[in-house]
Image 1 (cartoon, helix red, strand yellow):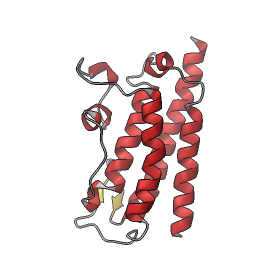
Image 2 (cartoon, helix red, strand yellow; image 1 turned 180 degrees about the horizontal axis):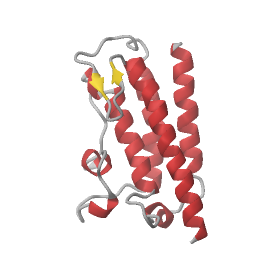
Image 3 (cartoon, one colour; image 1 turned 180 degrees about the vertical axis):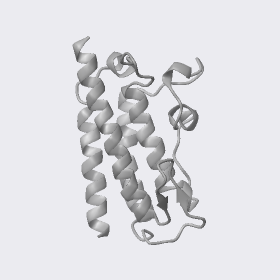
Image 4 (cartoon, helix red, strand yellow; image 1 turned 60 degrees about the horizontal axis):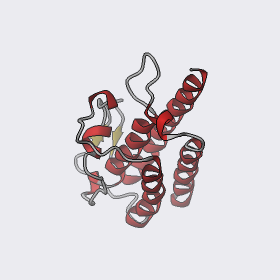
Length: 159
């Protein structure tokens, strides 16, 4: 099961990275009408939530560049980013997203069944208590944002 989970994580991440192809810095910053986030925010959010799910609950150090936690967490928006926030470039986000996968495998490959006390309840109401459960739930989370990025690319290409 361990190998299958890591293969799934790699597959979903490869799909996210593939969606970045052809996205310019300008396109990544455009917010479609009626929405509050952009492609860049979705990429940063995928990274931040995966860091939290993979590392924070096990008290492993997270690799979060300055300002990432505040600017890409749930409820945040580029509409509210402070002028002082150093917005990551697409190549920087791509590198972070690529490297994250190997860090997760190295840190958690032998700890997938460790119990987390207390268990964590997601905003959607799902209770997670092992790294395996967190990483499985991350597949759902990243898939949702992958679909949002696809939608944004379609909407923005029409304008």
